[in-house]
Length: 216
Image (cartoon, rainbow, N blue to C red; front, side):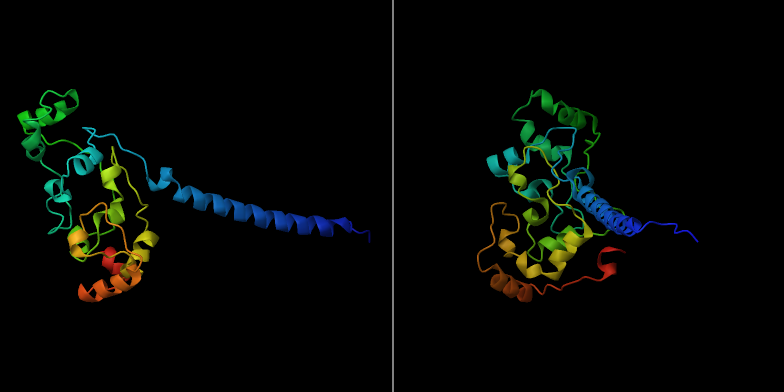
């Protein structure tokens, strides 16, 4: 019986297998990179808003505390969004005729709330409580980044589950003194691991990594 495949086919088959594995690996790496990209993770992409509110101007420039606008962050799951009245407490006296603030004035006049586009938008199956975190010494900038340096608000971190779990497994590397929670300029010291371990014990921080902690 005549030989169907030539001896060279052994080499061809080996090269084909290697090429297939490399292609599969390349596709996997490409998908991983795409999943981490700003387009998919929505990081560092400013959103269009009803008013181009600058955290940099208000926080770094004017020294407005996070809690002035997000006034439920210490006692509620939601940090809260400022009512138009909060905006007008200043803008009824300053920048009263600025065109960019016309939506705020209209909201005040009509009683219709401003419609903001949510920047940090967790899936509906994820539970997150702001008050628990800030009352345990987790600073705003750990999740939201240096908001005081953002002319327009964007998402600093991916908010992926692996990112959350990294902190839940090693809270001592992120926790800070409670009086520094709202300090945007705070930097972790060189002995953060030792300080963090002390704060974890003092604040009774538990390393919750069970599914039902966040998925309820």
